[in-house]
Every structure is written in C-alpha cells, then in structure tokens.
Length: 409
Ligand SMILES: Cc1ncc(COP(=O)(O)O)c(C=O)c1O
Image 1 (tube, rainbow, N blue to C red):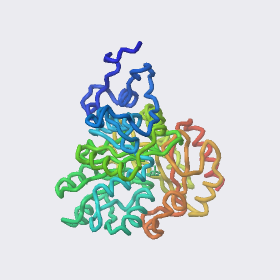
Image 2: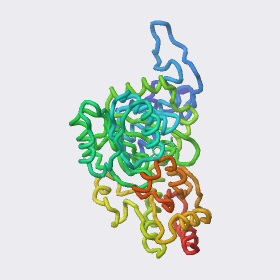
Image 3: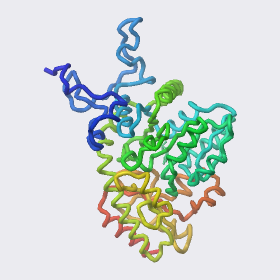
Image 4: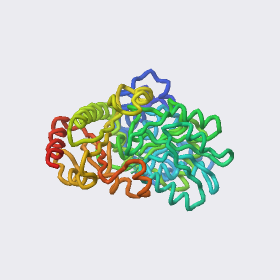
C-alpha cells in the first residue's frame, strides 16, 4: 500500500529547485518526478486525458488542470525538470523549438514593434523573423551580437521590445556575452531571450547571466536520441511565464504528454552525454587542426577559438559542447560535398544535432538553406561548410572514418 503522505512523494515545486542543496546530476534525474502516489511507479505515468473532471463549478482548477491544451501533468513534470536544471522559476514546453520561438515573439511583440536579433542563428529562426513576422509588420534588425555595442546602437527607444540572442550560434559557434546583452536589456526595459540549444544547461545557463528567458529546442540535447521534437521557454520572472503560458494556450502549441514522458527519461543522462560529446568534439577538433586538407576548424574549447576567453567565462563545467565546424583548404563546395557524400559509419549525413549518433551536416543546403544566400555567404556559411555534431560513439572510430574521407579527397 502506498503511503500518500510519505515524504518520498514530496517534491520541491518548480522554482524551489534553485535553492535546493542538490547537485546538478541529481536534479537532472529527479526534478519533476516523484513516485506515483497510486502505484509507487518510479516513473511519472503518461497522463493521456484531454480533460480533467472538476470538483464543482466553484472549485474549477482545484487540482490544477482543466484541458490538456492548457496544461497536462506529464508535460508539467517535464517543465519542472527544465526549470530546475536551467535555474528558472518555471517553464513552458512546446511541440518543437520553432513553436517556442513563435510563441515568445508573439507573446512580447505586436505589429510595429522592433526586435534586435542576432544575425547568426538557426536558419528557421532567421526565416520566421524575416518572412512571417516581417510580413505581419514586426521589425527585426539583424546585428553581429558578438559586440554588445552593436545591440545598443540598433535599439529604437519606444519601439524595441526584445533582444533575441543565440549562443553558441548555429552553425558558426559565435558566442554572445550574455551578461552584457542582459544589462542592455535591463537598461532599456526589454525582454532578453537567449537560445541556448547548442550549449545545453550543462554548459551554460543564460538565466544565471541575467537573460529573462532561455529558449531550447529540446529536439536536440534534451531528447538526445533522435526520437522526438520539442521546445522549451524557461523563465526567470513569473510575469513572463504567465504571458508565455497564456499565448501558448491560445496558439495550441503545447508539447504532447508522450513526448514529455520520453524527454523526462532522455534528459536524465544529459550531463553524462554532454561531457562525453564535449570530450569527443575536442579530440576531433584537435585531429582536424592537424589534417593538411583542413583550412579552418572552429571549436570553443580550442586555444585558437577567437572568443576563447568568453567561452571560458560563460561555459560551465570546463566543457564546450559537442558541436564544431570546419572548412576545407581546397576544392570549396565540390570537395565539401564529396566529403559529406562519401563519409561512412559511424557518421550520418542528416539534419538534427545533439544526439547519441554523430551527425555531419551541409548547412548551406540543409539547415540554413532558407537564409538569404548573400547573408549566408557574408557570414561564412559557404557551400563547403561542414557542421559536425558529435555523438557518444568512440572518438577513435569517428576520427578514423573522418580521416579516410579526408585522405580520399
Ligand atoms: C539553435 C536552434 N534553435 C532552434 C531550433 C528549432 O528547433 P526545432 O527543430 O525543434 O523546431 C533549432 C533547430 O535546429 C536550433 O538548432
């Protein structure tokens, strides 16, 4: 018989995790979950119910739920997990990372409002700002956020409502001084949203650096196994969380309970995976630096990384993540395409990143194809640009496969 009053079933609420003395890996495993009071099941059950029976008209929402588009117990458990590991007061989970992006922009901006946004971001972020929200009358200024002064200069007092950064940026890995951008946001009363998908909370927690909202494509490291898509907005302030939840309910973009259940399990191992992926990325980056056919390799852990001091300041646990990129010395896009077309297992040529499988991506024709070509080229996302997402396979196997392809060019 399960004792419903046992302290075993008590859990800190969202927000209370910030002040628990528990260490990081423990939070990743336990935040959001408690043994099921009915059965003692160690995993939260998938709560598949569209609606929730009310005690009475007067006691509407007495148990916290009304309809699964507004909120669902399994999704809430995953939201509490995200809030705990990102040091937020609460979070909202979405069906995809792009649903989270669409929600946060529409939650804080309307026609005529202005946003200063990073010029280097995931291609879908660039497209939704330029095309969809641009068509709806919102204004976006794309700036190089590696220099915070560019952000300050682009602000239009009275019009600017949001600063939208991404660090490390997809795909160039440029970093943003989150503290400096957050300081500017506070000075002008703006909302600072920081997409921290590449970093993961294991490596960087933007809210610790003053950002208001952290954005995650949980399709990446939270899932980490190429199983599900998802997104998250993790908030530092209750008024932002309330607004985001209100807009998500109107848009109907909540994560499904099935996905929340899966990501509750997969995210438990994120600290272990990210450590291994970071170590592998470092080994691969060092190997690429020595290969005669490689002109340039960028990885925030390398001494040669242009923003190394910033990486060391804002990255946690002495880790720099599983993402890197390189360019070939000769042959440009033809050689790059040949390498990506000929690379063998354990590598896979596809979109997505942050998973257990190592992935190589041709950004110019895949993830960033929807950016304007001139913007892509100006930033250096050439047709031969090769993005690498390290998985958890043995680095030796990944390096020997990469070496064989490079040697054959
Ligand atoms: C940094 C970053 N943000 C947001 C997204 C969008 O996430 P999703 O594909 O889950 O919609 C992606 C997708 O690749 C991404 O890399």
